[in-house]
Length: 379
Image (cartoon, rainbow, N blue to C red; front, side, top):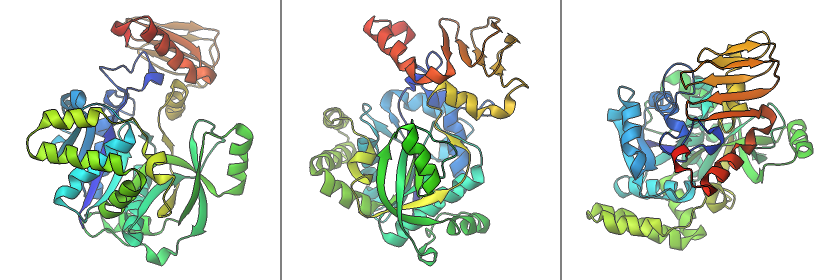
């Protein structure tokens, strides 16, 4: 029952335009502390868990991802390439079928390559705890984060009946140190009662008060057998296609594998499996975290670098009489901001973005308009 970690490195992060683009997606950008890309930081974060690491990414991004990992554990990473992006449902289904082909008893955890984490030890304990509950229940598990604010842009998981802590089972081949194992075993867990996607503010505030709703981080774990059984029951057609993709690759027919996978409908794994199953356990975790989905999220993740007026800047910006602004200059030019409050100002050399941080979600509208105008040079 070997332990495997799947790192999902897909998507382009359009809400971080103009920095994140198709050629340089969010996970290949150095958006965390230091100069490491988010992908490399993620892989280095999970290496202490001791599992085999598999990188799921688009075929066209595989080389760039391995380059980003150079010196950061790339030799220990196996690439499972998607011919084309089809969402986390098919991506994880492909990964599980591929892993189960040689290890049908595998215990698998999945993490995202483009998230920021404040407390890495607490993060690792939560991932290990979810894997342990997958083993204990021969089912599926997820990590839920105690909400620190009434976030309306995130999904929530409702907690049901508590799981008896003595049922938790350490995955047998993680290689994790005893302190980490003890921290994982101590985390509270409960059965999942349901998912709520992006509630309004009033409901999000209620979730904080009731203490039984956690943020959905998209961190999951399962036994290979449980995942494949749930997949076959939920979408037997998808399950069959993914089996054929893996078989085609095993026989060397990449062309057939590509045709089969390209014909799939994009789908997230939550509605495909996790919102349907009755075999889901939720681990309650406590650590600083962000999916860095918007410029506002990125600014919040760098709060420790803010000046006395709450501004965060990089690239030699000059700020005069500004408050709560996020300024990033990567175009080699001096950027000056005067008398502004709550703005994001991003300069990449070929594009400049200025918007209120409270409207950060609307960057997608800019990207959509550029796409409609055929501005592939800016995409």
